[in-house]
Amino acid sequence: MSKSKRVEDIAKEFRREIREEALRHWVRHPDGKIEQVDLMTWAVWFEKSDAGRFVEFTEFPNGSFLSSTFTGLPDVESQIFGGDPIMFTTGYMRKLVKPRKTFGLVVQHTLGAEWKWKTEEDARRGHAIIKARILANPDVDLEGFDPLGAS
Image 1 (cartoon, rainbow, N blue to C red):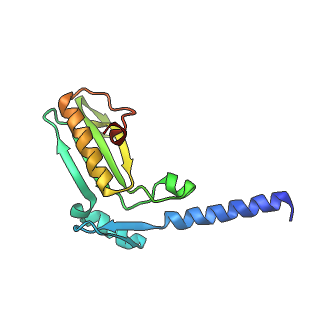
Image 2 (cartoon, one colour; image 1 turned 90 degrees about the horizontal axis):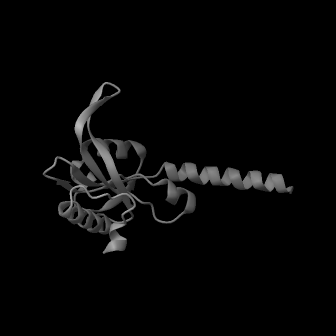
Image 3 (cartoon, rainbow, N blue to C red; image 1 turned 45 degrees about the horizontal axis):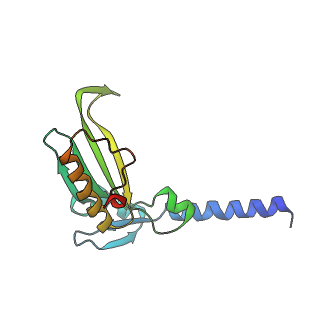
């Protein structure tokens, strides 16, 4: 087998594995149990299950908020490099002093920072640490901050 044919076969297998991984979806039940499901089941769950999606939510006095959620989708890193999928995310949305229009919509918040987690426990711990940091200083720069590395 030629070298170029071998590389082509490896690339084809890699693309197949990525497609299979991208088709995997999970739901999180209100009791915290995570179950792998098909795309349509996930889509209905995502639309209707606030109790399963939201892990933690904090609104701050200045109107900004911190939200930790379960996405039910595998992340790109685990698709490419393997390992457990990262399905929890925390986002800090800063309240804009002056709302602006984007594509005809009034935007009142901007993403201040984002973190990804492999487990619900890490998402809850990270959320608590980030929350404490913001409460201590509402103008804190969170870019590059590693909450679990700081605890």
